[in-house]
Image (cartoon, rainbow, N blue to C red; front, side):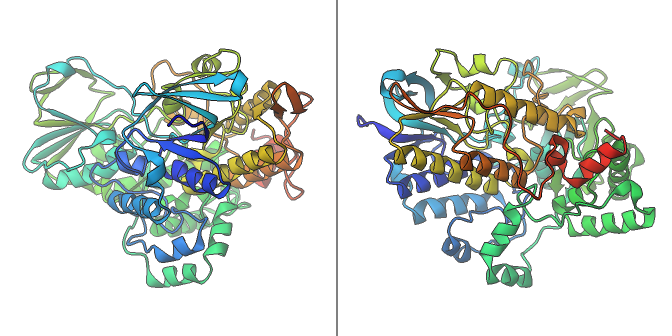
Length: 575
């Protein structure tokens, strides 16, 4: 591939595939490099038992082509991994994308070439590819945490990681199985493993809140209603905080609502299932008193499902407010602990000391296992990016630039790294939203930028340091106005030893974020420097503040971050 690329895309998940579609529309010479042997990203790698999406299927699919939407029929409200992978392959085949994707090929380095206004990208094959633009479509949850345990090399049984599950599956029939972790992957897989294992032992350090999916076939009336106008459905979901319709109640204040009304509303949302309880009251992510109402309700639901009160107590989170760690959506998780062949080990009371040849030894007990499953999470948002040796315009590496935590402009670009775009990167709403809608918003925006550069015959674009710092401050301050930082979550990088603590996503919502991006564009790409060779065509060093939100949004930071309720909280001295 000696010819210089216009756009080199890293990753063939939903971001990379859509980026390739858009590049073709612009007539750009583009190519994707993918470490796996197929498309699908998250849904290629994560094949553990019970893996499925936690956003409703009708929301979690591309919306850029109405015909594509209409021709694909999801079988369930929450699609399982095999169906999501089949969908990814359907899209790749429908648009003939695979001819421009190199599989089993990992990008290892990227170096800025000032003379060429572009990047020299090194592959694990040793080949170096020249490209004008690099798009990192590497995924927010694509690199597993490098978790190990003392003595693990001495264990003679089989070790599986949920994030790298064997493609031909695993048969646990009659086996003694241990699983470490109670995050989303574990919560989805534990009920399935328990059905076949001789005995399943769950090692839990931190319990998580989980809501029932009430999964099943999509009701025909729901599908027909959606089919009437997919465009309207998509537009409604994209202009929400989470990028999916969740029955928001922006002016409902829990602490001002009678208890019987609160209970009725929460019961209604619990019966509907999934994430709908997250939008029950507008103050629940801001006010500890409001959040406790929701937490207590969910705790009562856990006690209803788990027969042993001691086990129910262990499964009830007490160290973080509801929703400040990513809540899980499950099918029969809590009820699984009622099975005779399932036991729970509280690692806080009985810490794991070492693996042995036959299993695991905790401070007070020893366990023998035929197999151990590690469901130990991901190096979120920055992990995949920092594993590439990226060196920018000044010779600074991305790791050096992010030594104190990631700093970006709009979660999209990094100062000192021209022509490099992050799709749903740190500082964007990304993991707090329906990823498909965030992906489409970001990819559409990147292609707008490239088209604009081509229209003025510009060679490069770069975020200014002033814009990057202003945006990073806004991300930090917006998070600080919520309860999110009170949890030691992967949102904060707390699950990776040595990772700087910084809330990694913009909490203001996809709708407000989109408005800000549009304002940046409408102001002539404020916050960016655009150049052609030595000639600066547009310079935003005068940039001192973010574009104001649209007229229907209040102008202050708190209001922009959390809407009318945050203003109410401010006026009443609660923040």
